[in-house]
Image (cartoon, rainbow, N blue to C red; front, side):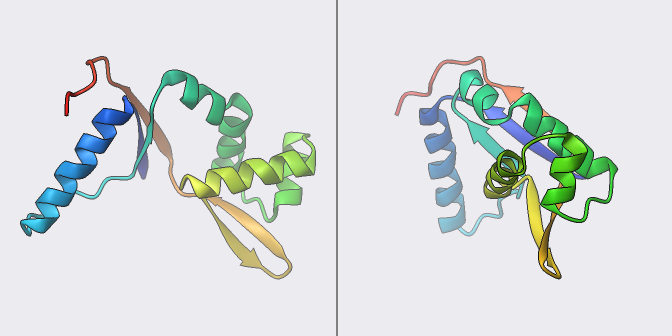
Length: 125
C-alpha cells in the first residue's frame, strides 16, 4: 500500500526541517525519502483538500477512469471544476496525468493519506 503523509506544522518548522535536510546532504548523510506534503495550518489544509477533492481521489482509486470528462460525469460535477481540481491535485503530487490518445487519464498515486498535526510551538531560529 502506497501512503502519503500530510503534515500540518508552522512555516518556521518546515523551513527548519528543510535546512536540516540540506545540511545532512552536504555532509553526505543519507536522508529518508518520504512522500510528504506540508501545510501550514488546518485551515489551509481544509481549503485545499476539500471534501469534493477527497471524493475525486476515492473514485480514481476505486475505478478505472479513462479521462477527466468521464471523472466529471462519474462525480456529477461540472467539467471545468473537476479539471481545475485534477490540475491542483497533480501539482501537489497526489495524482498524475497520463496521455492516452486525445485524453488525459488521471491516476491516483497513493492508497492512503495519513494526516499529522503538530501541536508544538514554532521552533525558534
